[in-house]
Image (cartoon, rainbow, N blue to C red):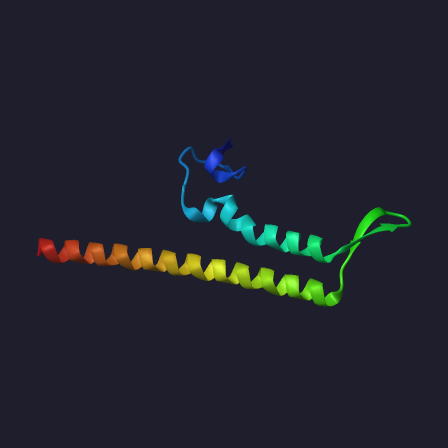
Length: 103
């Protein structure tokens, strides 16, 4: 298996690398980083009796963080789907134009 820097530690069986935006880890991790930051900012650090350090959240803060995270993931998925379908239609129009030009 070969790992390429564009894939950010994603193993692949192929030598060629797809450098599309959806493989960029920064795009995927933005929502995760914001989620963890929000939890870290809203949580209270405590010392547990058996496990050592921990963090306590209110249900409201945890639910808000989850809702925001899910909205961002859904928005990202919708944007990716739209961009891919737009590209597909552009290719289809281009090929149809080539067919009509030959005739």
